[in-house]
Image (cartoon, rainbow, N blue to C red; front, side, top):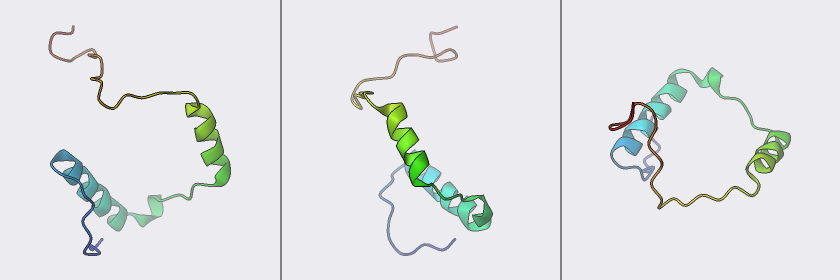
Length: 68
């Protein structure tokens, strides 16, 4: 997929991931699927009441340094 000349605003790993996604979509456009209004409503219902603090560090997971 060719760039449209606009930057996607990513940097570092984000930029690499977005570039890889663009290449994949360009090579395999058949994998794209539309999202209908019903799915959007179900997603909103799923996350209703969930609060996220983007400044708070995520807890350690198994396999992280210091974890078994």
